[in-house]
Image: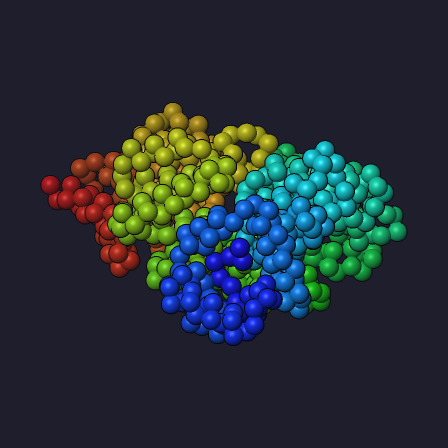
Length: 592
């Protein structure tokens, strides 16, 4: 009843009719019979040798006796661990739940909330939800009280982390409306002002507009924080960038009037985030750097980490890797000091993505090992490893990571890395690989309500499909949209990246516009050389050679040969076997 593991002090409290010697004799009998065993690293701590033994012994007890035992265990554990209740909250919640008919629900609710908060702090989101849902089970489904309202924001955080967006939004709205109804303006405002993800704020714009009106006029900080979050929600849609910037400017004006550096930094960081969502990389970089200039004046770690993340994204997209690495390492250092796994993962994945682009595959493996130690289901870490294994010709290992990603799709309401599939199809040279596109995807697929960073995912997929299938009509449809991003690197989602000009060169080649194709390939080579993005450079060289061979025919092949030679040198140095084989096959054609 106490669980598979138990310790001597707890057993002594439960077996109060036995002397210490008698209890030790009973334990010795259990050890001799191999029913239980001592845990080597903890004196006085035991476990059942097999979980089935524990289950069998428990099943032999009648239900009333099991309930009474759970009640005694709960009381004993609460007394014994009174100095560290949060560490044992999950066990206490379990035993009080099993003994509900004896103790009622008061302590069940108390320890379930404590256990949920503990699990949330450890990023155990599904466990946290199970504890919070146990609290809800003790309540009237149609009613909401103070206890329920207090856990709804935490439930929203867990749902959001699991990509359960509608549930997260619903939890926030329920909490907001409860506090709004009882007139607790401060808590109503607090519930919504820290919504941090695109998926959350998109569903909260209506509530946020109401919250701005609720904010106390004598409390400019709350008003400013709400304005910045409202600006974020507007900026997370396709056509509201200008209103979003107006809200953020109002927040900044309030901050400067009130000498509130923390609010100013927050609004600037969100502004940089919003610009990144709209692929305005130069403005994103500038706003984030403005925010970071304030970091020494105020302790606003979330704003600093947001600004660092989008500085990294914008610098990566603009081909400035040295500065990118500096900011990634700064972000990692700050997240380590805060012991914040979410930002640790963001920082490590930024370093892994940059290391991949620069061809430092050993560093990629070291960094992603840290990522998957923190979270074995991290999509970006799995995606980078998937790409790396396919890139180096380890197709079985690549397929392993692909299947792990696809296995997450049901939990995450869809697969979040379809662009990675497109790039792999290009690497392996198999049209059949595109069948993976038919699976569910959480990524937007053409709805105009999403900002370009999301909306263009569908365009990238169609563009790579057009190239792979040689579909000139589809290539023409996607070319004009992507041309606006010329001169940048596509960054994300979850770990994938490529030169926009390389893709534009391939699209123009597919259309049959060889002059435009050459222009884009020249720009791709210059961009990748300047940035040191050698992996993308190697592919661009090979693709450019294909175009030159098509254009020059059997005439002057010197340019194509030189391009292939450089591509082969890079791919050989990095162990990019599929590309090496591709280049060698082209060289054989030239020799024939």
